[in-house]
Length: 260
Image 1: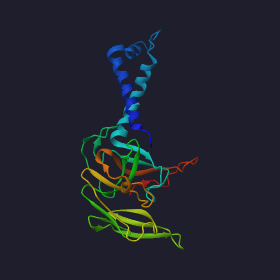
Image 2: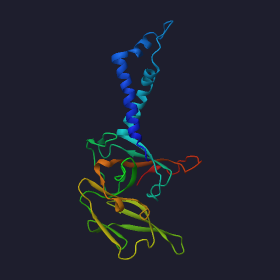
Image 3: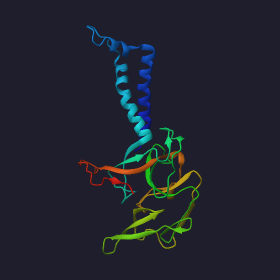
Image 4: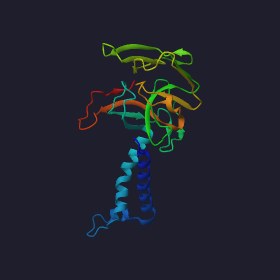
């Protein structure tokens, strides 16, 4: 996810549209070709103009869908295990957090704000050409603290329930159901990863969000590089629509479902 597909699509759509406009106003080749289509010697329009008219409607529809409605993404790493697996193909709701201009990300119509517990796609602050996906743990004004293997938000313990430990003998990983403002989801944690007495704390500034991966001990998130500004928001991850294991594997639908 290191190349900016939104920028490429926007540029291609703009070029195709300009070709059509230039022909309508100046060259008028497409109209001549239509008018002489059934004559003995039909007019042959320039191939570039022909391609412009052919591709512009398709590009424009895809551009609108991806920019303002839904955009597909692929999960490339295990930082969101067990919620999302490597090879999951997800749909991201682009309008849930407000309509934004593609590429530059400027909000043009406010709709809603990210809430604690949402799974959000955003542009990686240290490298905005990359898209990251994590869970919203802190919203503007929140005080996030971690002490003695326990997460606190605004002084309140974040509720979690142990589901399983693996392996059965001398377990080294644990799975919990975590409750963030009523949004229950699975998280994974490694036993003994944080020694007793390990603490850290953050206050989320206005217009920013604190993000963490559900694979808590294997996630490059806000604990290491800071907060996500509103301008970097891409959308809310809402659905897994297909799964494909890396390599030569047939896609499957066994993981289809809403993202908790």
